[in-house]
Length: 240
Ligand code: CAA
Ligand code: NAP
Image 1: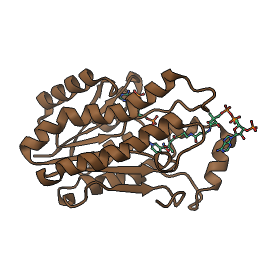
Image 2: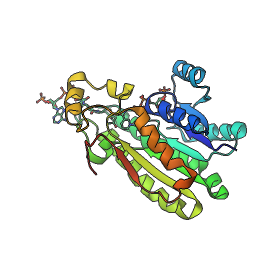
Image 3: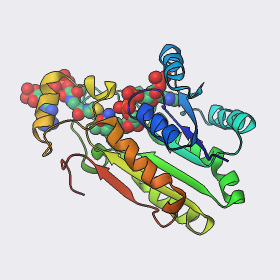
């Protein structure tokens, strides 16, 4: 039987590429999303991958969402915690709301989704959790105290949970992408983005498919010895 994988934020951008990559490798994929029904419908039509809406920032909705997936598709073997948002602004301009929203979605979402599958993974002696962090959680970024804190938190979360899963057949790893060509990056002011790209040694933005490749490596059944690691995929922008 194909292993069952949930990709949060799996309908657009990096998540889209991860969902399709996993599907092509033979996994049964369910793509979660947060609010854009139209894009999710288009995604499902184009890929044949079912999409399911819930807000990863909401603990109860994650629990209910996973329960419904299990009832429909079977126990969840793999979770890719990819859903994320930005609310950039300098400290002077950032409001508490933008802090909470980013922390609750990007970091809280990892807890909510991992918690919803954890007991079942322990019981079955198998699990793969991949958390999408960021170069900006490793290096910091001007105008992103909220995002950098959340992504940095993901890296700590990964190393701590990996220790709990290690002897139980569950691996927990993170990927720290650099600047990848998605709508999230397209929202950065062009003059700022130009300066960022100029600092990427490879000389271009990354592709979503280049992140998906790494997810496939980490979730493989043969990947049991890789845990607690963070894979940096950033075109050489930050060598950690
Ligand atoms: N370092 C030092 N100074 C900087 C700076 C930097 N990186 N960026 C901007 N500044 C300075 C500007 O030069 C300017 O200085 P002066 O006032 O002396 O002219 C001052 O800060 C204000 O800059 P802005 O006019 O840009 O201010 P703003 O309030 O309009 O915007 C901002 C601030 C929202 C942070 C904007 O600069 C911005 O969007 N920056 C991009 C942040 C970023 O990289 N976000 C990544 C989003 S994608 C993502 O997060 C994915 C991922 O994981 C990689
Ligand atoms: P994106 O194009 O903006 O797509 C975001 C996806 O997340 C969408 O499917 C969106 O669903 C979903 N989402 C947002 N909030 C959600 C919520 N509360 N609950 C459930 N789903 C939610 O972003 P991306 O660039 O692909 O980024 C994906 C992940 O990679 C994020 O965690 C991001 O921080 C991280 N990352 C990105 C880059 C980059 O350069 N792009 C670099 C490093 C790390 P809707 O369509 O319904 O909104």
